Length: 550
Image 1: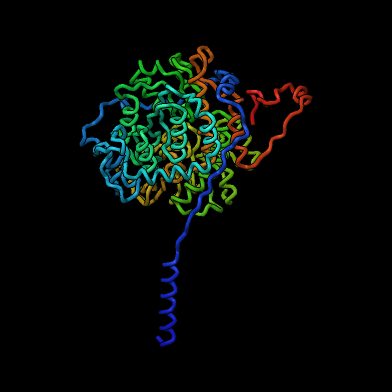
Image 2 (image 1 turned 30 degrees about the vertical axis):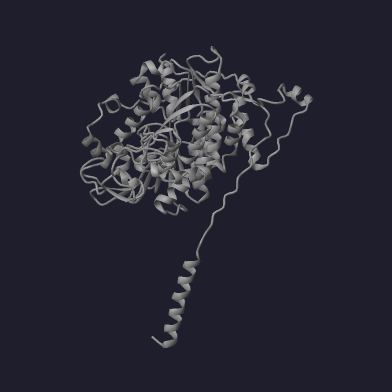
């Protein structure tokens, strides 16, 4: 090497070093102003609601988890450790523990084996590491910046304390956005105990932050199945505290309380459910005459269906797939199982990336919508050998079977965007002839004897919240809806709600939407008296009948 070349190389190394030393990226979050354009107080809001019960029969039967799995005796301490080391263990596993789903710095000791105390001296919680509370608090503060409508509701109703005396037990995803909801409920007067509805979606630092403030949280990322039910039981079964309200996502908490603690369940004043799986379970109980408390179906509200299900999934599906696979989707053949609001969002996102998208559907109306949007509607068996990606979002079970998994080509990706992990028959893959290889967090290669590999994401559980995050603004809409539903059920006069499942009142949907319009500096047109009379509407709403399809 010449002397000049050597000098040039030396200068280049020095320049590179100086650049690295000078790198310092500062992120600045500006506080969003609180919406002040609505003058409706909580008393007026409650009296304005008049929900309409829904009695639509459920055609697809979603079976409860087998009692033997849920209600068997808790294993011994040694047994718990065995479960937590690998909830999906087969004889050929190449990975060792569920702890690998969290940051590699986390130890493998289950939180159930550790005694932790927060700064107030309380130990009524079970999280991964209470010392992460400060970091979790910063995560919550970031989420608050894009949840101004929920904070507006908190500020507006805080003095009235509409949830004073409410003892809410919740089972949802525990994220920074959910923490803003929980702290809003506490600010409105409620006492809360919380657990996670998904074993992989908990943000450990957020769970720690909530526990530090005094909320009894029992959840951590990478729970075993036994841990999952243990956490639910700890939330419900505690001395000197009896819940009177339920906020559920998936119906596991409701079903556990109904089966294990029927006397407690009968004293519940109301249930708020936000997932299609949980709503199916409620309708089953109602149809059988076993639902002894009123329940609010948040999942089928307009603000949940159109925003959380459609717009949220349209963005988060790509986030989850890209983080886990690094795959380019242009030209890839993708099957979306189900063309409901979640399926519509997934289809739109992948089509925009240039993917060739197929749809499977049982409903002719949804199928026709898919056709009109330019998607080919097929049976899964017709394309199973050629597709690159399968995404389930039906809320059903065994949508993708072992036989179909056997016929998929090498390198195919399989994942689920529905709430429950029943859509993909993952249990059938726990056999000695198949090898499981952990590639990265939430990504497994399932290897067949001939060397074929299928990439399974999050072990068939909810992709976006297990493998990535979801847009905060959309969760603000859902959280505001949940808070108002709890307020309505808790404060409703006796007789307003029977022992049935109700849709959210239209007025509530419109109110939630109006709170979020300020973010976009949107200005609604107001009806004149003449126009309102012509349409037969109240100038302040509701503007659409309950049967209207947005």
